[in-house]
Structure formats: structure tokens, C-alpha cells
Length: 187
Image (cartoon, rainbow, N blue to C red; front, top):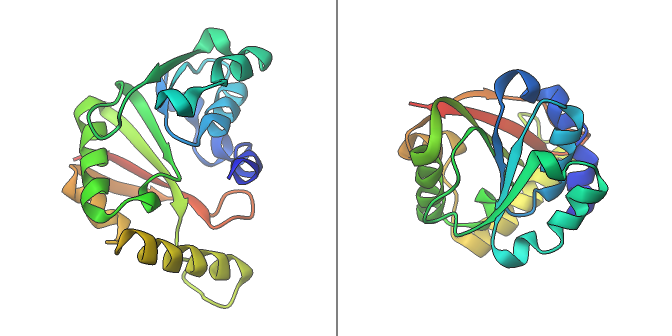
């Protein structure tokens, strides 16, 4: 997980111009490295890394070593209950871990605290249009595993809509992976 995130982190600010959109963002579980990469690539950006106490363990030292501790606040909590507010919220590798009902609960927590003109960036593997590529094989295997473990998956567009978001953009794959940025705005 960490290696995959470190591989795509440099592509994140290029795929979505964080420095033009946000003065405050939010990270979540398993995206410490994406948050660090985004902050490093966008000098004017400030962020909040939000996770459970276990999830943020050691993050303060990691951000300090990277010279980013003055630009990133670390908060703990439960993303099913509430999340810190922000202009841009980044949710990486989280939705595929939960069934549809829990995804909507999480996304509604984001919707309640995002700025009216904010953007939600969901980083997840997305099924490519053609299935004859190595990228497609990884996405198909990920989808099958998550269907078995979580009990099904509605289309991302429908999950976002159920939580009060409009899907406005899907980027090309990041860093040679199946992961794309799904950009959503409050409906």
C-alpha cells in the first residue's frame, strides 16, 4: 500500500492542481504519503491529516523530517462520524474497503464539512474502458476482491450522488497504476 501510494504521490499535484484550488485540504487513512507528496509539490498548501490514533502514529515525525510539519495539522477521529472541514478533501484507497451503505455514510460526513465551492478527490482504482491491458488486469482483480470482501459495489458516480456530490471529472491513471482521481463537487 505504502509503495503504491509513494509511486503515485508525485503524479497527484500534476493530475489535479492542488495549489490553485486549496489553502486547506484533508487527508485520510493510508494517504499520509499522498498528503506529504501534495504538500511538498504545492508550497502554498496547508493540510490536515485525519485518521484514527493508530493511523496517524508516527506521522508527526514523518512530516517533521520532510519539513512540512508547519503546514500539516494531524487530527484523530472517526470518518463515519465527522471529518475536519476543508476546501479540498482527499480520500485515497478508502471507499473500496467498505460496502455501499458505509461508503455513503463516510461521503455524507465529507459533504457536511466541505466548503460550498470545495472539491472531493477520491483516489481509487477505476475500471478502464478496455480490458486487454495490464492496467485492466489489476483493476479487475481489485474489483473482484472487494466484491467478495465488502459485498458489492455501486458505481462511484451513484455513491457520490447519494451523499450529495456531483462527479465532475475522472483523471487518467496516476503513475502507471489503475488509480484515478474522481473529482466531485457538492451538489
